[in-house]
Length: 190
Image (cartoon, rainbow, N blue to C red):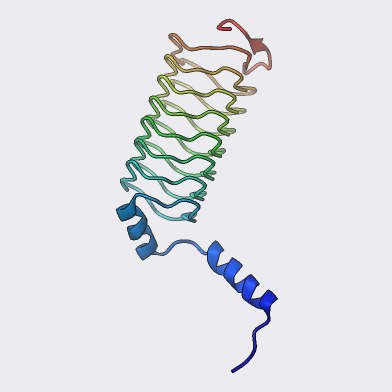
């Protein structure tokens, strides 16, 4: 039997851990409602129901998540960069410290979500529902928020530098040390 060096075994195990999940892995994750740290990048997850699932630290980058239901799920620290999550549902979902940069989040319902420290740079949030969302310290640089609803949202310390904001509803929205699209701070709600 050929001998395999320890560095070769370590390299192979790292390779295996970086491989995307198989269909059976995905089925198991849905059944157990947990997929922490798993790799679902570049998958077609369109229409899946991930209600109440723990996806903390998961990699969902470049996946098709159109019309996915993430209601009540936890995506703390997850990599969700460059995904298509349009027309999705993420009510009361925890995206704290997650990376959703450059994602299509058009017409997605995030009502009541926790998005403190979340990176939404360059994302398309046209028509998104962000009622009551906690965006404390979030980065929305260059995001497009036209016709989004931010009623009751908390944007304390958020950075909207270069964001496109037209016809946005902000009834009861908290702006405190918020960097506005023109780079100027808004402290009206402090």
